Image (cartoon, rainbow, N blue to C red):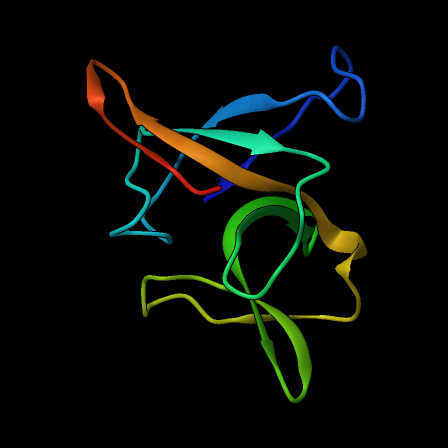
Length: 109
């Protein structure tokens, strides 16, 4: 998932929503689903995060190994992106919703 993020109307700690674009995080996050992101959420191995990598905003799973941290796409067609530090991570996904299907949502915290 890549997106353009305009944060001009939100303060740093406000929870916000984004629409998933693409298939890089399938099957957990499908194209068109809505994610709720907490900018100040606790980062841990396995969290789904919003990060800026390679000049683009992306939804990925944060993973830790002996070599450090990486952004991991669930779809096998997308490579992992190593992180030099966690400064690239700008929020943790706390919930998802499927438009038009109220009960199809899921919480991550």
